[in-house]
Length: 334
Image (cartoon, rainbow, N blue to C red):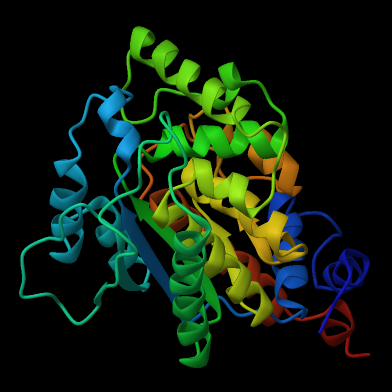
């Protein structure tokens, strides 16, 4: 079912309150209603699927963190002691973790909510050649799509993608530079703590990797600069949108995945709501390309789904406004 912003506005203006008196909350309610195709949208139940993967470009010194941090943080997430899982628990979000391509999986026994289905033990170095081939791209996409389809089949109405992968802001900068046309200087940020010199080095790698594409922006080109967890998230978004779920985006990496999803499955962006705009300078360009306005601008840059989870209570408020507030006609007894 589709619904227009104008139809939602008529509904909002008919509620027992002065028109426009709830400001940005009303605009968010309209986004939510359009994304779900109803004036009575639901934000429960909700699931976050966190996809993890490693990146060969880490060997180029684009981050101050070693690749082993990906595995260590996934283990922390599985234990429920990470920032993302703390916020998910606070807001009643079901969590799954998927190994899309880590160099080393955390040691078992694995919890029931962990799926180990790596495409390969990390991507190749995108600075030296393609990060993956088309068959690997398709496998990662299918992995994410299967997670979205399973979530919707289980009754989840709102989906969030989280990510973990040291080096993945370099791939995200490449994707953003390629698909939005914004310069590599803007697309390339500090990620998880790169200093000025490291950022300049990272920017040069982004410029060179995208230049090698020769202007191509098809699947093969995107495979050359992406990461397994990023492509899995793109598949997750495309399948989730096709199944009627609302997609609440997190930060720069997941928005880069959203760019891929909307490029290869046009119209996917209609199901998206931007949880926040991160501190990464390219994030704003990626959101603008998708036509999305962020709920929060709090200079967050952790990833893992934390920005989306922080914004989630505001989406709950938007749903409550549409579903539970009496109309003016009801108040007046007409």
